[in-house]
Image 1 (cartoon, rainbow, N blue to C red):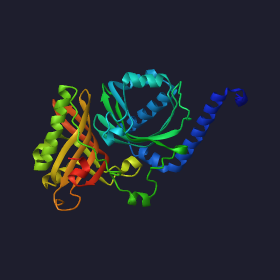
Image 2: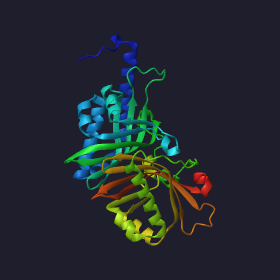
Image 3: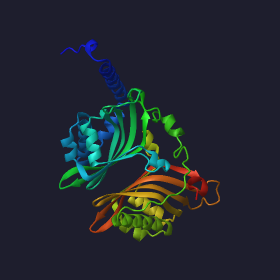
Image 4: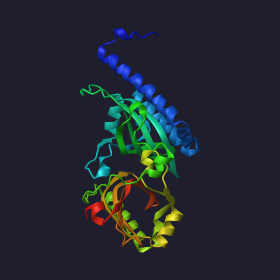
Length: 357
């Protein structure tokens, strides 16, 4: 089939050129990142591989406008949070789509490109967490912006849950982005060992007042109270309580290096963090600006905690703040702490400089 470009309307011609350039750029970016992308996917086996395969199919369906497929693999309480302003204390800090709003985007074919990259999966029995980035070309119909569409990078964390034997997409949250990415290459990405060594987490420091968000339901209030009880147990060194309320698969990812494409420099399992609790490493562990998304037996909290490590009281930077994403699951009628992931931080300083408190 021959496509006669000279006969296309000017607007359609410009769009076609843009898409072709974007596709070439995305291919170049894929060649540049090479083994890293395939290694992260290849490392997953079994259920993890199934989740990654589903995620790839979802992205393809979003571009094709396959509403039926996206509808079939998302939960009824699905949430897709665009934008990372929430990490800067903004309210709402981005655009929040429920299932119907996101399906409308799919129906309207708003995305010409939605390519996953550097995605890894973390398994927690019948829950899965994926994290990485996608390269996007957002071109909604009727776009009135004088600027042409451009490739952007979105770093994200997503949650999947197994419902009636089938993996379902529960939640997407943008953690960094969208960032302009010519040829699909994010200029913020840590690409070399030297850059990884020089990277300082928690920059720029986000110094915003603490906020209190009213829980949207009794269940959400219950989750917030539970989260606070976990923080209190950490400070008092209550190993028995922390052990009781945490899932055996607990993973705590510290540092925001991963939101720039680098490996996390500190990851705790349940056993290693229990040792921190046993040693009473935290003088304080206070939550603020926390909100909750409820998804049946799964709760996702996001916000900030401010903490102090024992022994640093007399230093010039005794406190630190962390913006986070956490997952809880109700198991046999009781909430369990399943996963923590640092989104921005840790930012170090005085109590006031890290939280205006």
